[in-house]
Image 1 (tube, rainbow, N blue to C red):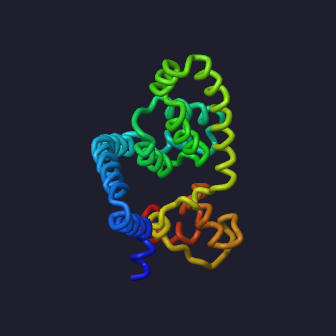
Image 2: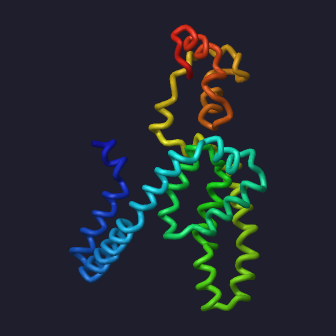
Length: 223
């Protein structure tokens, strides 16, 4: 029971708040219901095509291409490419998260994910055109000049503060093959725990474990 409450705590909290307003302020309750309904309808219109496109990208675009273009070794080129991807994308920001997760699984760096999400939110080309029309081209240009460096800086800082293993899902962590835990050091790390972190961070692969490689050679299975 405790695990269920922990897993669905935000939904439970929302239901409790709705119930409170239903009995205390029905005007607020019905306004919230209408906002929720509109938001859910919008999500039903936007998310299905986004998920289909994301699934096709996951199949068609090889991981090596993502890692080369948006990985931790992509440097300034990767950051500029991330700005471009976020800027030309369309749709609300929540539509960006499935695509970001797919890129993350394929090897994109934390820094470039932050840049994609941030530029998607605040410097999309269609939004810039509307901003220019209502707030003047001068306002748009100055805000853009100030925003782009801030996004790049935020991406760099986030990569220093958040490692890949911090945002790895529980299912992904459980899917990693168990290590022999003999702490031999042949992989270059002092113990198997540090090696596992390196695998999760994409710095190493399971092939770098001598004992797993030997076991696979005996069974004829490739890691």
